[in-house]
Image 1 (cartoon, rainbow, N blue to C red):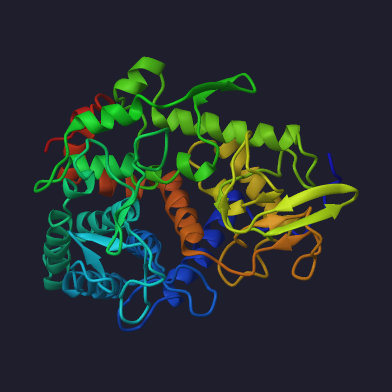
Image 2: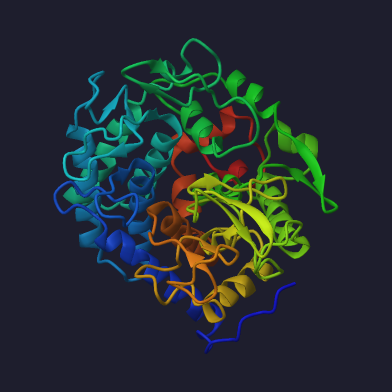
Length: 444
């Protein structure tokens, strides 16, 4: 184990630390937006487009901001309406520069015009993340005022026009995406545990274009149950897979057929996956610097590569943005403190102490304008921005959103409650085979 860095001044109690982190992370969604379209930037790099998933997170973040006094309700309604009106009126069609097609949206959009950029794909899972934010806003803004009523009306229109059946492309499982130049991508959400839980629930719950449960069953039949470090769980290497759907869906105590077979719900599974990640940091099989009981958190993240360097006599390959995973890799020594925070509801007893370590010992927050630096690599020989190692120069919306939403779910369950009471969500969960727990008490 490498020697721990000297400790910096404390950042207050655990509750104060989390409150400060939520507030600082929220500033990303306050400032990194286009004033006309309301679109939210994928990252802080100049010229970066909007990410449709970051927009979905932003819509949910505005709900948290109202509850925590970071935005007035009127301002949150204004920001939400700006986005929903934009997507309602944006062009849907097969043209290569449209905003979306068949109710779906392109992964990346021009910040000002909202048109497709980078020749990216029409993304099914990112559209689902966007719709999760849309329905969260509709559930929360339940007032009688004209603005809140319009939010609910627009949300209903946007969700109803998503043609999930079209995205099956003649099969039973959902395709990853579509491009106007070449048609459907050759990949489907049909192999291995992934963030597609939220996608299938929303597709199953649709009142207009619902898919059949058979596709969900086919997908879950491919899940891998593994025993790692004496911990049995449904395996997926990157932490974000164990977190993304949980930003909105409360899986505590509800079980689908796969859960009934294994005896644990997806929430418990994420708790176990979090402990696997921590143990991987302790074991540190590849000998990276700053891997220990407070040094863990492998996920999809920015990195210092691409580069191949010899570091202290060892040939190391470093990656740029890639989905890193534990314990089977890929791994180049890059850890992401935001991903640790996103596991807060699952394992607060190990997350809080790790977050405190990242703030007080590693200074991974004070140089960032918004919450945590995106990722950190102490093995890569670059100390220009942090004396303890390389840190990403950019902040990402997909990093900041989970910090805010999971701190809030841990403290108040706000997003879980608002999203979980929406009738289409309840319908989707039940058609996926979920039973028991809080779901038994909810009426459609």
